[in-house]
Amino acid sequence: MLNQEVYDELTAKFEKMYGEKPEVVAYAPGRIEVLGNHTDYNEGFVFSAAIDKGTFFAISPSKDESCELTAGDFMETAKFSIRDVKPAKEMSWQNYVTGTFNWLFDGNPSSAKHGFRAMFLGNIPLGAGLSSSAALEMCAALAFSKIYGIEKDRTALAKIGQKAEHTFAGCPCGLLDQASSMYGKAGALVKSDFRTNEFESVPMGDGVAFMMVKSNAKHALVDGAYASRRQACEEAAKYFAGVLRKGGVTHLRDVTMAEWVLYRGGLSETTAKRAVHPIGEDERVLQGAALLAKGDLKGFGALMYDSHESSRSWFENSCEELDAIVDAAKAIPEVYGARLSGGGFGGSCCLLVDPAAADRIAAQISREYKAKFGDEPVCSLIRPSDGAHLV
Image (cartoon, rainbow, N blue to C red):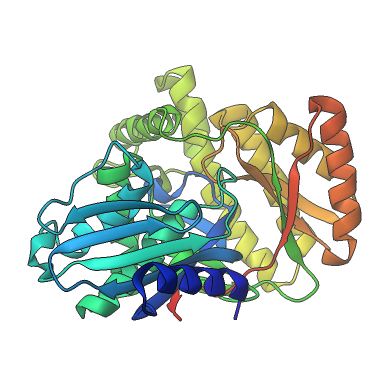
């Protein structure tokens, strides 16, 4: 089993705390975003992958309406009743789980008939832009569904996790993170169409892997930077709907790069800059799918570099540390492509690499990063892995 040691630690802690083994254990991986940045809420396309690190969620029903939820890493427990499920200001980590529980019951968790005893533990590095929050929501959703006899498909569960993030955790995320965690396959990318919510598996081929390079830049999305980018995209879509095809443009997915060039003058400079990033990203994902079908990994990697340049120059969701990592990667032949991953504003870069050269790549990037910033990034080799499942 992937991450067996985390599973063993979690089940041992659960048994010590409650005197019995958990009735159900579910697992969900984190994700890397490979191409298609901030396109999910613009109803566009994304390439992502489930990673080989994740979170386990262990649960048993309680005999009454009481609920206990324990974060297994620092053994902090939140206690509440199924009749009192609401966003918490204290121990705010619980909101990802309680929000998922709330919306699994359509906002009426008191209909659950009984409470639960649950504990979770994972090994996704926090603040690395690998979506530990979505992994937690998805393994919780699977575990809750099992013990309460709820049957929903993977897309419905992904949407429940997204709604939890919006309403309980206060982050207006798209569906990318939850869908990637749900639909991942070993050795493949997930190609997502966020207009139709269709998710397909695209093989990467052998001899290639990803390296996540975690900067030490502060990574925070709830501070309004994400929300302001999203608002600009929505403003731009309304503008293009007026000047292009009445009723035919609902999101930036419907706008081409050529149309942006022709009509950008009617937008403020900042809104025009924000809009061109997801428009270009959609085109890059579709180009990338054609390149992967031909086995052209270097061509695919070049699109990753283009994507980062768009983040840096247009969307302005990069930072000095992420730019330095990508610039260092460009000088290494065994790195085919590199870009920031996730919301941006800190976090990690995703590199497409030859795994045989992983140690040398990590050493060179770390050396250059340390010379510039005085500390070392965390480099992790990652292979695309299977998505969320019951253990």
